Amino acid sequence: MRRFTVVLVLLGVSFTAVARTQQSAAPEAQQPPQVKTNLGSDANGNPLRLAVKTGHVSNYDESKVRPFTLPDPLAMADGRQVRDAKTWMAQRRPEIIRYYERDIYGRIPARTPDVKWRVAETDAAAHGGAAIRKRITGTIGAAANAPEMNLVVYTPAQTKKPVPLILLLNFGGGGKPVPQDPPVAADILARGWGYATIIYQEIQPDRINTFDQGVIGVTLAGAKQPAADEWGTISAWAWGVSRVLDYLGTDPSVDAKQVALFGHSRLGKTALWASALDDRVAAVYSSCSGEMGAALARRDWGESVDDMVQNFPYWFAANFQQWAGRWNDMPVDAHMLIALSAPRPVYVTGGTGDQWADPVGMFQALVAAGPVYRLLGKKDVGAAAVPALDTALVAGDLGWHYHTGGHSATPADWKAFLEFFAKYVR
Ligand code: GCU
Image 1 (cartoon, rainbow, N blue to C red):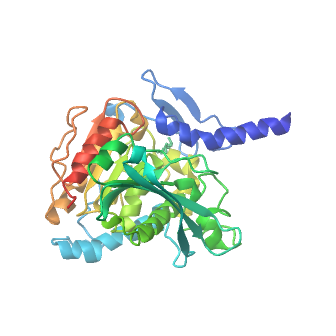
Image 2 (cartoon, protein in one colour):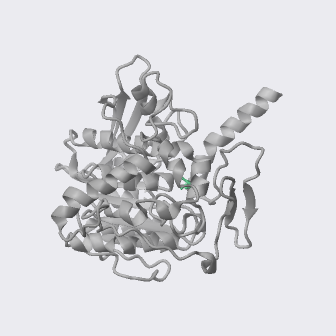
């Protein structure tokens, strides 16, 4: 009986992430059960959570958001002001990357396993003949029991030349991959583009105490855990994106210079960080990424840093723990994470029913990334205040869509993204 219960609990934990992509914004509880951190929800259905270390409880009241000052993305640590693109690229940008590596997501170790890709399957008549589908398996390292990740690539059947592609970093249950198609798959193919999916848990499991598995496990080679400034799972997933880009660079059906990256929620955080680390990402679509994604951490709304260090410690470097209750002291905030992709286009979405992810805080971060885009000769998001719901802003190089609805990437979000990305496709 007891064993049965344990099994159910384990199953419950691993399925939550998948279910969460479709619907509600309730976070998983990964902390010890003796402290009740789930305080239910407020009158509007927003999750109320307690962060034990600081006593912080989720806020959804604008009058209780304490005023904050964002770090100036264009001021170097030594006080010098960045006045040209060259100084941004050569000095300030690397400085910000180092902060994120040291204090937030953790740096990817200098030596990581090689990945060998091989085409495992081809179907020339996918999507009713509209697409060619290939499954490509990447083996992480050379051990006999090396972990494998499966990339599924769809390219339009009719085209002879290499096509632009949208890479979806996707949820999935582990084990056999269940690729999730974007709701606009047919539109993507009709535009003459391709898309590809990779299941994030094949790169690194999304569970606490699994650093002996995935790419982190292979890299540690028996050592207990990464150093305090080394990778958590978000950096590991970002590493996986770079390995997929390595493969795409060798696939003659894909134009590797025109690969956009999509991720939702925790994978929306990952997409921003992966793009910061690898400029082969041509455009980013970060859906409902929330705290430590596109949402300003200094703005106390929905999920906070205090919740995050408690509930998802393994997503980050161990050093990230230091910021509980000290959000204003962090050398970075979400506007800087977004700006690390500049001058490349970034599109961010939020949902009215997903206040846990602080859509307003995400919009404000886009606005605050504007100075970097303008310095690089690009267009900012084009508005200072949150625009009307369900009205996409896609005229600039920073894009935005606030959908009516919950924690998901809706067909309307996707349609606006295709319009946004189309501006860059040659
Ligand atoms: C939890 C977590 C969020 C995360 C989300 C998801 O709700 O608190 O930060 O974005 O899970 O990935 O679905």
